[in-house]
Length: 444
Image (tube, rainbow, N blue to C red):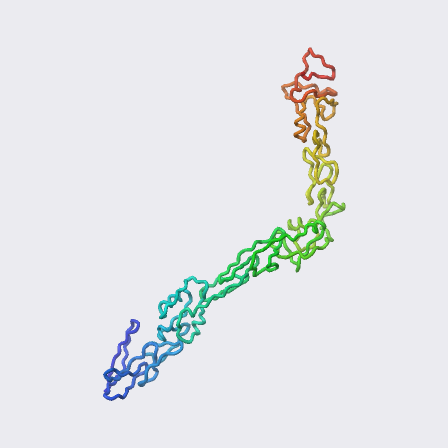
C-alpha cells in the first residue's frame, strides 16, 4: 500500500513543503524515494523517504542514502547536487551547509571567527598592522576552513632605508619603497617611515657611511667641511667626481677628489697690476656666481684695491680696503689717517694729535706756545682744552668763547694761551692796564 505524505521542513526560519511517496509494507522490501531524499526505516518497520539535510545530496531516484558534499561545495535541504562556493569558503562548524564570503577587513575576520567557527581563537585588533588578508588562500581553498586566521599572512617588514606604502585595504601585503632623496630610515618594520636627513649645506659635504647614496639611506648625515682653503687661496680650484655640480646652500654628498690650477679669469675684471687680483672661489660660489664642480676661474680685487671701470685700481692715500672683493675703497674715519696707496687699513693718529685730513695728523694746541697768524692754532677767540686732545682725536682741541665774553682781537699776528680752559675768555683788559700792541690781557 502506498501513501502520499506531506513533509513540512523548517530551516533558518523559512518553511518549505515537500510531497513524497511513503510505502508501508509488511515485508522488509524497500520502496523508491525521489531525488533529494533518502529511504530510512522507522522503529515500527515503516519505510519512509526523508529529505537530504543541508550539506548532503541525492541525485538519483531510489532507495539509496544521501551523500555528503565534498571539497568546497555546499547544499541546502532536498538538493540533488552540491554547488561550488565561488569567492567564498566553508567552515568546519557548518560543514558544507553555507558559503561564507571571503573577508576584506580585519574587522570581518573577527566577526566571522565569532559566528562561524567552533573554537574561537584569540581576536586580533581591528587596526592591526602586522597582518594582511590573503584572499587567494580563501578563494583557492579546497575544503572546510578549520581556523579563520588561516587567511591571515604576516606583512613583509621593510628593510632599513625603506618605508611601507599605505595600502587601501587589509588585503594588501606591505609594499616597500626606498627612502627618497634627503630622507632616511634606520628601522626594520612593516610600517616604516622615512624622516628628513640633516642637510649638509654652507659648503659642507656628507661623509657618513651612506656617502654618495641618494636613495635608500639608513642613517642620518655626517656633515664635514672638505674645502682646502689654502689651496683655493692659491688659485687651485676643487674638482668633484662624475661631473656633478652643487650650489653653496644645496645638500652635498659628493667629495672633492682633487684640485686644478685656475687658468682662465673672468672677462669682466682686468688685473693689470700683479697683486691687484685674487682668486675668489668661495665668494663666487657662496654668492651664486659659479657652481662647485665648475672650473670657471673667478677673480676679485685684492685688499687695498677696488673695482673701477672693470679694472682693479689702488686705494689712494687717505683711503683703505681691508678685505678682497669688488667693493670701493673707503675714506679713513676721523682720528685715523694713512699716507700710502694700496692701504688695507688706516692708522690711528698718535697721542696729542688730531686728524686734520685723511692723510695728515696735526699736533694739538698747547698753552705757552706762540702761534702765528695762519696756523691751525691761531684762534684767539677760542679757548684751549687739553682733555679734548687726549680723549678725541677727531678735531682740533679748541672751543669758541661764549658770546657773553669779549674775545681777544683776531688781528693779532701771533699770540699764546697762558691758561687752559674757559677762564681764558675774558673781556679786554681794563684801562688801568696797558698792554703792548700785540699783547692782550688774560685776566690774571
